[in-house]
Image (tube, rainbow, N blue to C red; front, side):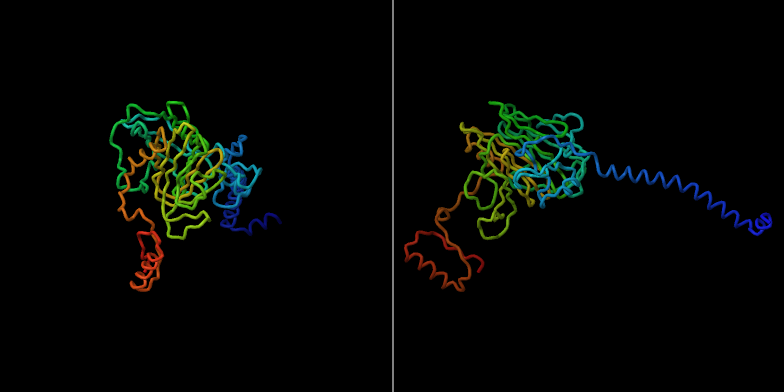
Length: 377
């Protein structure tokens, strides 16, 4: 009877059955292998746990500056989650896995040196990270050091400054500073020779360089920081207690809410000690940015485009630092004598006759002013 049933199958049916059996036999081990690879890939996607040594609260560089911190977001970014202390202290901070490493040794040039940097394996914060960055350093004068970080493989926007041109000279022969670079993770230090004081130290946080997010943090020798703007400040000396200030020029009414106003000044001056020794830092970048100040003391520049183009100025006094800064960017035009006087401005006069009435009324009240502005009439 069994033989009779076998005769009912055609040759084509037998061949198809055999083919299906072969496919089934091959598919099972492939499925098992694929499942193993999927699990392996999933584990790999989780990444190696971040290297999170104990870091003083004041030394933490915020890994979630753009939103309220959560453990899930922190882990997604490969950072360290330590929720302790007040919320102003970063609960999520960068691990030692973020940043760049130097490939090979620095290459000496007539003006200074160059170095090639490669991004270290770590999760991306906002995507489109630049994997290869070029460091160009120049000892431009005895008191001025310049370095910039650019995309090694593609051009990016650089500020076409009226006075700041590409440096074509040789390295200054009598520098008042030393420069040291660390390879992994990459960092750069500027040290005053006379007292061996470290003025500029980027080892406190990682270099980040993506298409629309660039960041560098700087450890400072003192909390006597002045400059940066434009915003409304209650005092000239900055409050270093976890303050963040936006920098992007816009037309808005000055008030005390900490918003960005008309001007854009990315320069700050640091008074190192009671002797008057000072230095300044200027980031030549015109994109929207913010600066975060913390009590380490340290400052973090974050910008959404361009390159990181830094100048460091040394001086024996704050005045000398400002002179070095103006020597680079150009001195301001001498204003007309009347422009130094008290000025008033308003809009919606309606007519020129009404504006004249305002002027005469102020003069009759013996208000000592020199200028009456017609705003947006």
